[in-house]
Image (tube, rainbow, N blue to C red; front, side, top):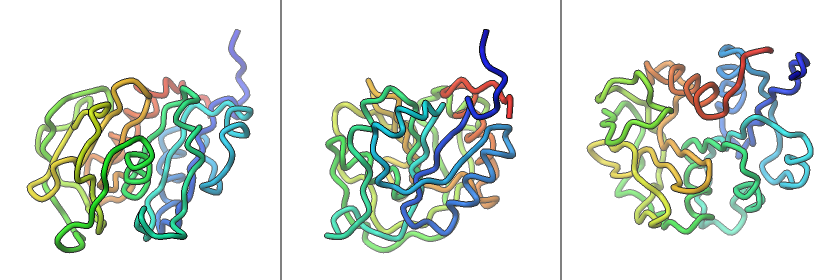
Length: 201
């Protein structure tokens, strides 16, 4: 019989210096799941010991190619735990797993129209075309063959991705912001359709 202890459904948000890391955690809690902030370089062995239902990699101001850019333990991608990368979190994950990150022609900041190419569980009930909020300088320039593109915008060919064999999803946009009208739905889909949370918190 599963435990009713709310801590058995924790999700950890690894904070890469995002101004919205606290907001991401708040949105997850509003969806009924305990969310806790943690440093980005927490060892995979420690995360495995805590047995989270999911891991979120937050955004951040750095570029993955900067010498002192924050990084996560690459072994977290081998734990079998669902991971959601948001903005920089998507970039560092894709970079770690073999994709190429490159600077855009200019920093993109503001609303964009998201066109969904494929409809996995994370986009359940989301319109084919919706408004999202972008805030990034880099993007995934060349996607590794182990990834598939889920959505694009007029300026970004890989605005949302999924790994073919690991439980990783990446979003270049910010679902935690109200400027992304369906962002809360996307986060809820990730929690309940991908992480299989029960909402016991």
